[in-house]
Image (cartoon, rainbow, N blue to C red):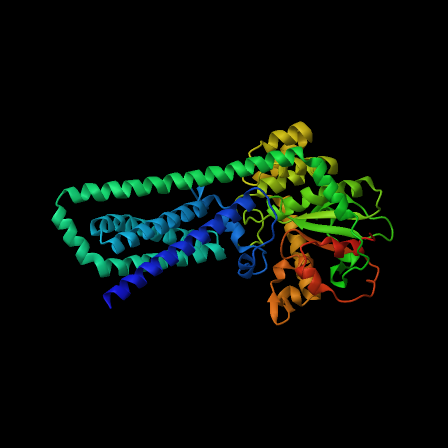
Length: 466
């Protein structure tokens, strides 16, 4: 019976640490995607607990509170569980070979890693649930794995503890030095692997940043492909009456629609990785076309910063992004061309590496009044941004009143799709709607298809006469 218990403990230890390593790897990769503005789609697990905000993992994984010594906590967790998994295999091998002295030394490292996991879980549960007020699915799964690991280590100590203490007494004072050397070696590998992984991810971000700077023509060409979408039908749920169009002082007016033409409205957050991706891939090109007036289509942007500091309608907290959105607002007041130039500069940087002096940029490229506008917005508590927030909130309310699935989710064969993924609900960013007084053209109800597609433009194109 004792051998069966030992086998079960070892199996559980290897299983949990392996699972924890995989979760840490997923979280670190997701952090990397968010950091450099990759839009690979929101993982279903991160959308499940988002409650209409689109991505439950974004706030936690990009928060400054989620770093230790500048290294994301996801990377620390991945390294901790990885070292624990490798140590568990050594521990199992030592037990199988009857090398009890080695097993006792190695277990001391497993015990230390359990204390690290326990401390990290308690600290970051508080940060995530209380300070950031977000339920990050990957984080909660990692905390569960940490708790399971600590429980297994406790059971292992309960089973082998007496034997380990006997070896400690038999070796005398030299035992402590041997244990210390084992722990120091393990901690060294843990630290080096964490920092090394962070350098690896940072190098990837730098490479992507360089490619984006050199590949602007490629981005524009891809935008041309999106613009030439052959869709002819417009989803009825995308249409909103012209009377609901946000006011000029509560939106950034790219172009005013010509008679009989529709107006496209986007709700975005300058710091949102999906918004940044959308802008780089197609909106930069389209907005410049609309600004030139050749299309006759109207276009506006409504800013929705994901920070309670400047968005009283936002229930959680995100890394401070109010200044980035306020800088766009002030550049736009100088001229729409200056606003688009500012967006080009903002999104050319990796998401977490935006360190340029926004006030200086505004002064140099949009004029001193724009820099003064940013200073005034910041000191006054962002009144201009809050007008956008209220306009966006009204759009959300009206969309929810018009489309029941914005409140309950869309039933996909008995499985509800999170309404945060339905771009016409204005619950996530970027969100789009088309304002026109003309009645929608009759056609099949393809909302389910729209909700499941990764490309919104086949449905928006029909609304804009493309």
